[in-house]
Length: 274
Image (cartoon, rainbow, N blue to C red; front, side, top):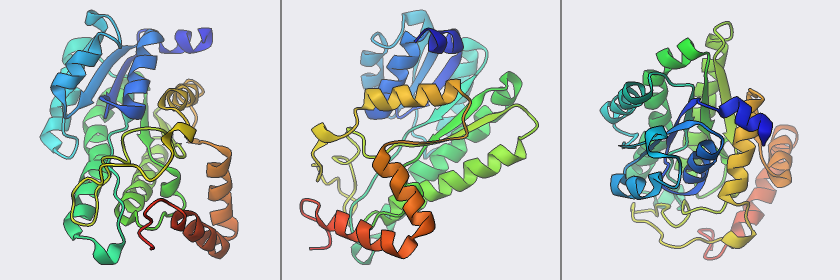
């Protein structure tokens, strides 16, 4: 922890989707490690109620931001710089999931996922980039194993996560000589509200998770892995043994991985395959 505290002390960290799950756990950890934290989410009142648990009043800022709205993202970055004078790390964590077969899906659902997951990352990164280049800072995209090996019944989710990975990998190469760190962070299944809020075929939230959340990695453990990846200025972090095995299997044995993935999803409670 001492090495992490030394790395994050007084850094300005912007975290989107900071009102719950991995985002909230990351904001809390950054605060404990001595960073100044900018918490962004659509639920401003909730952010304000959580802020005192993240960092002292002078070291935390809550900003209402719908990342699918470009002007909100611009305002978020402006507010962060106005308060703290710089940005060292941008954690693009805000995200939305879905669960429905593509053949049954209203296309507005896929558009919404791309707007939040992909364009949210692009929007925030665009406006933060000048400040990150000044500080030789880091930008993170929280994706998923589904951004490496597709998950059936999550067409919009997987597509958006693949797109984020492509965007960030390209950004890393463009700024290879500028000192910008770009981290693609891919958790496996992590306990959070994301599956409860996942959209169904008609765009309504499914309201319950098909997984046993108690058996999944905690958001706090996930945030610690993220902090360690940032401190090491890594380009990629893929979490859990199953996650790493899935990524490698997809690269080496894609047809076999397709079959195994199908069987895995078919075992879910109320699987869309049934």
